[in-house]
Length: 256
Length: 366
Ligand SMILES: Nc1ncnc2c1ncn2[C@@H]1O[C@H](COP(=O)(O)OP(=O)(O)OP(=O)(O)O)[C@@H](O)[C@H]1O
Ligand SMILES: [Mg+2]
Image 1 (cartoon, rainbow over the protein chains, first blue to last red):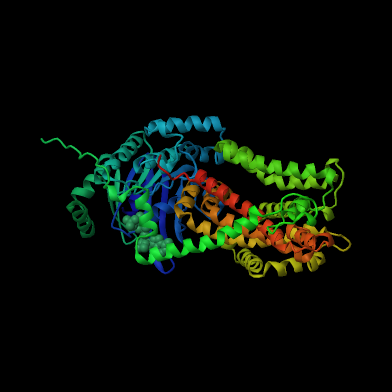
Image 2 (cartoon, chains in turn orange, brown):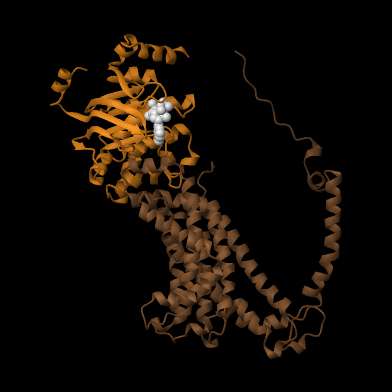
């Protein structure tokens, strides 16, 4: 994107604005001059080879990772050291992890109501009603009183999505939500995500599911070596790659 | 298309199941194993009959003085005659109901933790368990709640061992958790203070701690205050226990995956909410066996208190053994009795903790 284009985008309703973001792990420069703007309701798929910094960039957005240079604004709140800002941003951003990260000592229902009760200070009854509503949406209301260890991977991941949704976030981040799942469970999770996309949720999703990208993404971002190498509509990215790096990547993931 | 038909299950071959096979497999599987089995059987045959004879068959059960011990076997008359002292110390006889009440409450709380469901366990059993030692102290002391005051000089016996151990672990629990958190802290000051405390109380022998407690602790209290001996012992036991438990917790922390912290953070939980609601329960769960082991160690170490003149069960036993009416050499009976009482308690605790572990285990598929 050219500088002019960026300027003209400045005044519209971008919910995430990342400017010249740089991050190091010790001496290792993981993220280099990341610039990214996400509009409200936009669906973005992030892809790229292993170690390219996809997870790191995504995790900067809700401050699971710190960065050393540049700026990041979420829903008008700037990400700075202040705990108030960090908490304000985390309230707006839900995150779904590769390994689900459900709380194993709590039932499914308790997993879902924990955030609403303790962070949003909602009454228990209300939190439980909301939780049941979302469990129905991810089609497992009958599992409410089980523990995570008693559910299949696909069910656990749907619970994890429901847990984030219970906090009523503006933005959902997904970091390879289906890569720890058996093939037969991938679809049930993707279906939930597609439904969520159709309802207008702002989504950033690191995934290698290209079918999902083609179906829902407004924009696909290709990263390599800590940089955003290309970003464009799915059609352009898949049919008309501009760099040899992306071409190589596509040939590798489409080959198998 | 061909239909897939699973093969039917068949019974296991006869020579791999059944009790005879089990015995053969476990005791006579090889020449060396057979010899070991026979040797052990021979050893048991020589040891057990005389032991049973001494313990039970020719033992003396009835009577009130050592003159009643006429048979060759154990003189249980000694233990029976002194049992009140062993269990209750020199607590006044007409107030013994207070100690019994405390024991009943302890049994009640333990039973409730086994019988109630998770919700009520959290709401009742755990708070009751945490409060119990303090309630017992109030009841035993009496002066705070309108009962007759019983000075700690009269507290003693096995009841005192239990009380001190329980009261110490309950204060040590939160303290050691904070120390363990401190040890993980990124703030250098907090971190080094925590390490210092943990390593000091773990590294110094408990006996040395007891002596320091009786000699040095008073220096830290304001001049003129006379702090009860038992309170000083309580403080020392608590700190000693906390040093060990902090290390137990450290192991527990390492077993909680980073994903749990990340999930809690991304929900927007604060540091303390994350620590207490998400991390602590999981740390306790993985640490249960080690917490119990530490507690058993502490419980047994309460007998060292005889050295600084606290009338716990072992020093009561020694008093009884040196009593001029009982100079007939009953030390075997006396110490065996103490050993059995401790063993019964420790074994029950390990059964209870195993059952708690099963209850905490939510990873099972059912
Ligand atoms: N805590 C850390 N300390 C040091 N280096 C790290 C750390 N976490 C990640 N890295 C490095 O940063 C780079 C980017 O990691 P990141 O996890 O963001 O990659 P990714 O694109 O998500 O890869 P993958 O597809 O394998 O998940 C990698 O080279 C990784 O080795
Ligand atoms: Mg990754």
